[in-house]
Structure formats: structure tokens, C-alpha cells
Image (tube, rainbow, N blue to C red):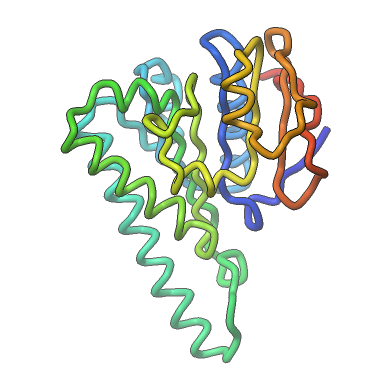
Length: 219
């Protein structure tokens, strides 16, 4: 297996067509986070993950999605203030969230494309602004952004967000254009894979080429 240090690489992108194993992979990561005591805000783009209601804060309607993201940004800002205060008191710069006993906060978006497709231009701008704040500021205060999508275009995932997804996983059969969008640094090592298989690239932990990935079994 392989492990990701989400304190160093706090953004995760899961890509692939419907049925490729994205949701199964997302659930595996969420259960891993829950075991480590994380709080989870889940944006359920297709309203299919009711089974998690007792474990996470879940939103699926656009108004409640925006409200939940606003709550996550407020928590992010609270953490920034705590880290700033702790840094001033200790005289140390660059304190990690775990060093002041802050558990991870995970903001997970299942099927971002479905969320964006249901929003008008004003709502899209609000969603992008909130997700961009989380993506850009999360690393310093223990906030992890996890995004799953069938598409990796700029219209679905703006560059400011995509550039912060330090770990990218592409699952199943995928057109060459999607492969290039997910792994722009690759020289072509990542090809289309079978269902429940794919490729993973972790910035700073591997070479330039994505490695093979197997969708984890649940249970």
C-alpha cells in the first residue's frame, strides 16, 4: 500500500467516469480520517451518501452546501487565529495544527461537477470563492480538501483549486484528454485503466510519473 501525509499534502483529487470507483475510494479515505478523529464536512453532489449522516456533517441542497462551506471557512479562520496566537507565545513560526492539538478538518466534495451544474452564475462564484479559500489556506491549519469529479476542466475545478490538490488519483477507463488534465507533468506513463484500478500521483513523494492504484476494499 501507500500512505499520504495529509499535513504536508492536504489536497486530494479523485477523478474518473461514473462507476470507476471514485465514491468507494472517497469512503475509504473518509473512514481513515474518522479513525484519526477528524471532523468531516461532506458535500454530497448526488445525495447518495445518507448512510454517513451519523458520522459527518452532510449537505446536498445548494443552499445548505454553501452554508456548510461557510461554516468550514469560519472554522479555518478560527484555526488560523489559534495558530497565530500559539506561534506568538512560543516564538516559533510555521506551527502545524497537530502541534497545538487540532484534529484534521476534512472538507469532502463528492461529484463537484454535479454541484456546479446545479448552480447559477452567482452561486458558482460563491462556491468557487469558498472552495478556493479552503484550498489555499488549508495546508497551514489542518484543513484537508478532498474533491471527486468526473471532469477536470477549468469550468469544473478552477486552477486555483486544482493546483492545491497535491494528491491526484485517476480511476478506470479515461479519455486521453482527462489523463492530460489530471497528470499534466506526466510524459504519458498513465494510461486508461480497468474498473476499480487507476493511477496516483503525490507531489513531493514520487517521481514525475503516476504509480498504479487499486481501489481499496471497504469493510
